[in-house]
Image (cartoon, rainbow, N blue to C red; front, side, top):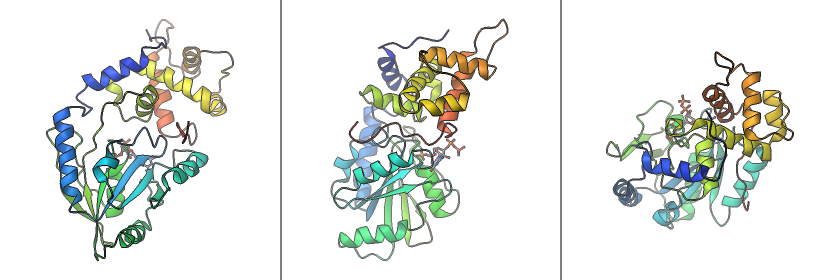
Length: 294
Ligand code: G4P
């Protein structure tokens, strides 16, 4: 039976951070990775900080600014094919303050990456670096698309830096054939305290569903969608959401999609999987989960 939404949801998901081996919260591992990042910084000209355009702040490693310091950087808002145009615009101006260059990218088809070498050259030249070949370190939490981006720039599949503690293949240089060398780094996900951040990370699939109560998560997602994109929710599932709780909406979707078990009860696992998967694949439209200043 699905658990009904309550105030303990965030706490429960936060507990999952502590319980799972899928999430690298281990202080020793985080410290080791951080030390390696700092050491590797000396070997690169610029940092490519990759964020998920659907939730740029939730998917940002808040320690990265301290680690990177004044190093030249480009902020890459990846998965912009899944986030709203308005959200993309607002986040570009948010991160574009000062000298920081920001690019909207779809690492699957390469949109936004065509001029990345020229842009990186412009940024490092401003910082007084005149190397012929540019060395860039790609950083970001797990699942933001670092490997996809590197593969796209390199033009073929390269090995992926593991996000798992103990099996990290750090210091992996990848040549892109365009005077750009990339240093792949493992994604570190630190424990988060803010409920909305935790939920956003779960919605976009950064936290593995295997360690979550997907029924509760799907209800939480429906609650969020009712708030930000009610028309898209109704249109996708052909349902009426007026005066309904998230759980009732989930049950309506189950009925529409035939998620009914033998005996007539609702298959909560299946319908929850459908809602989460269709949101993540962009089937409800281009949706930004958080906006600057909100
Ligand atoms: P990571 O190295 O930062 O951990 O992320 P990774 O490249 O493994 O990407 C995580 C998932 O995000 C992959 O999907 C990948 O295809 C998808 N992805 C990356 N960039 C983009 C993008 O710009 N747009 C969209 N729509 N998706 C993107 P997956 O389902 O986990 O794996 P796969 O079966 O697609 O390879």
